[in-house]
Amino acid sequence: MEIAFAPVRPDADTLVFAVPKGGFDALPISAAATLAAGAAAARFTGEAGGSFESFAEEGGKVLRIVLVGTGGGSETDFERAGAALTARLLTSGASHAAVEFFGGASGEKAAHFALGALLRGWRIDTYRTRQPEKAKPTLTKLSIVADGADAEWQRLSAVADGVAFARELVSEPANILYPESFVERCRHLEQLGVKISVLDKAAMAELGMGALLGVAQGSVREPRLLAMEWDGTEGAGGKPVVFVGKGVTFDTGGISLKPGAGMEDMKWDMGGAGAVAGAMKALAGRKAKARVVGICGLVENMPDGNAQRPGDIVTSMSGQTIEVINTDAEGRLVLCDVITWAQKTYAPEVIIDLATLTGAMIVALGDQYAGLFANDEGLAEDLIAAGKAAGDQLWRFPLGDAYNKLIDSPIADMKNMGARYAGSITAAQFIKRFVDDGVKWAHLDIAGMVWADKPGATWDKGATGYGVRLIDQLVADKYEG
Image 1 (cartoon, one colour):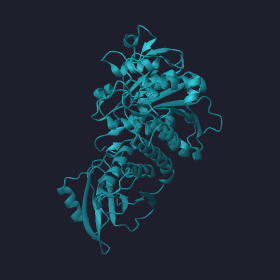
Image 2 (spheres, one colour):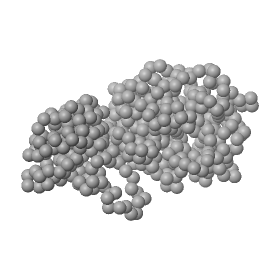
Image 3 (cartoon, one colour):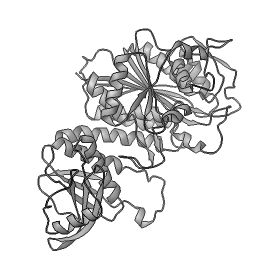
Image 4 (tube, helix red, strand yellow):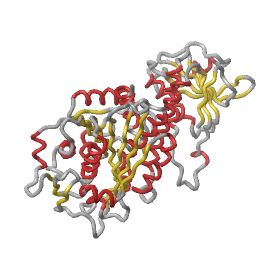
């Protein structure tokens, strides 16, 4: 969908008026009184994301008229309004909508309206060979009457591109997206100035990444470690902030096989890696003035005759040994080696990992928040603030020695899972054992957030792109010079 900003209303087949909560006076069209009466009868009050639709004759033509609510007028409210408009018009038969803000709006808020509209309009039709006519998208252009939106839109459109990329990666089936093809999908980031480095199976074996390779050994798809570096500081950025993404491109559970029902959803078990890749695209696209590294540990977890068995002991790159109690607790095995490699390669002061790690997190928080674990109070506060601002919300969970003892092994340095209870916490405690002293670290368990079973404020059913805006906001708030 094309987004354009214009100083005056262009010709279009649909007129849209964005109005604040509490209603409006006369709209600048001849059928204003009729529309006002209709909106009142439909109980439209201008609440954020609310809408009312009608038709009226204007300028000798019958036009579709849509009212959308901008609520209290925050940037988030404007995003919800734009998203609501797209949800209403995308397959409606309308092709070009012209948007005016009743009472006016700043360029920044107009840009956020456009962001919401663009995000809600994303869909993946790659594999559809036939669709009912009424299901096909018709809305191709949105013209927004506003001044001064260009600078903000340049930034936000880059973020939208990053979210779209993450959604694309998360949506692809595992026969199309696997470790090697994930890397190839990210190659285009080099055109934006991102430096890409890749470790193959042999290189990881030489480095001693026994934990990651143990997960991958049951699949014919070879693992990869993908590192993406962006430096927008012209070499003056110092140590980078590092984001690590869990990239299990399909997770059967391995020998500890998952139940068959719903296993198809495990194509999105690489949602953390998708978020990191999408964020790198967003940061490079908007030329963020920061030094950032995104690293994805990419594997497929399959129940082959060569697959890792419960009870196996593996040696991680850090030298610590791990008793594999359950092969379905595989994400932490991937993350521990990637985090060790990141510390040895980049010597960062801050590492943040994102992972669809535990079903226990979905039980605890559902689809409203991702779980946050951190060893530093300031970093935790920064992440919570960034999540609130970006709409990718976080809820903090505890860490402590009492939980840490639950993963002690009688035969190795640790087990890869503890008892039934506090599963998300013991997973975080496991990862924490691989974080070097003095490194600020946060673990984000995003299991309930990367895929939606019903539409949300700015996404349809399916991949949400969760994490991209969170990372972008955090970098903007705390790491850009």
